Length: 435
Image (cartoon, one colour):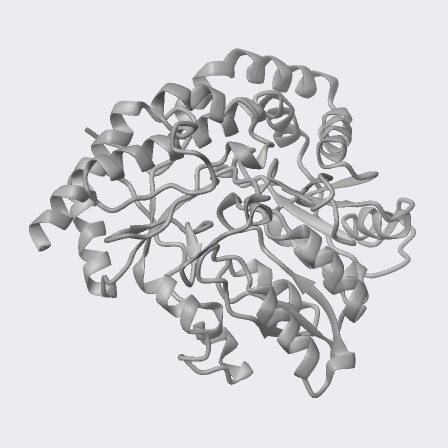
């Protein structure tokens, strides 16, 4: 059985005629740059996230670059972010002339460790030069938005949320308020890369904000710093969201909740199969009967509810980076389950595996026709292009361990239950053979 890591073609078959009809309509009317489809998408995404403005740009990397520029962050400034993320989260800082400060990740969630963030803000010798934090909602799991807002208030830093992987995820505050990822940053960024939960058929991205002035800056910056044609107030870049990609995204946006419900169902089924295979998967954050296969539909009926998300802890071999059953033997409190997860990726950690063992497993799965990926093979502090930062290997042990032990398994809405079972069976075969 050939099981790809991700498959665009299955999804496309479901709305091919609608896509072709809308693209033909756009080409016939000749409006292919910042046309009606882009405006429609910007309006819909702003409403989805709960902000006033959405500005379509060419890709998620440009969205981050423009967001940093909009906050006037540049040479001499520092920005705190995670070393366990895609390159663009850090390059947007350095391309604007500023310097990244890395905070290690939480060993459970793999999101940036907010304790480490606060430690930097308290102890850095040039504290006044730290202008912002760029947290990443990694793999689709919301970071603690309530705490981020408190950090901003306490330390006077600004927040750029990197929501490239988390559209639709949310956090429930202590008072019951539910906020969507992307809604609390001064600016937040989205990627519509084809593999994302809401993916285009090429590159596309977006910036969202509640701030009128920041929105005006971003709209101007994406067209060479020109608020009026041929009048340039600043030196911007050419980064416009393509009209044809916006057409595709408008069509797919109507199905986003359906897609994310199915991703949650897949995550639940993975957990059930791992547990059945004796690989030590456990479940927390919900009652056992709530998690049973009989109630899968009930669990996944609302992809925005934090109670609808499966969470796992490590017992023997497999660990999903989410909320564990307990910490230091003490059960988590109810508020520790106030996140939602939209499973952009299904990344598991093979605890105790060396990098070589993890890679051997990946090779074995490849031989069996199963696609996998490694997010991420090294921390960004270990990349050659950032050697000038003088951050040696060993500085962020949690990140470096994750880079050695994690593997992304296939997940996409059209994946079948039979395929999920097959992936787990092949992993079980490998693990059993090595015991």
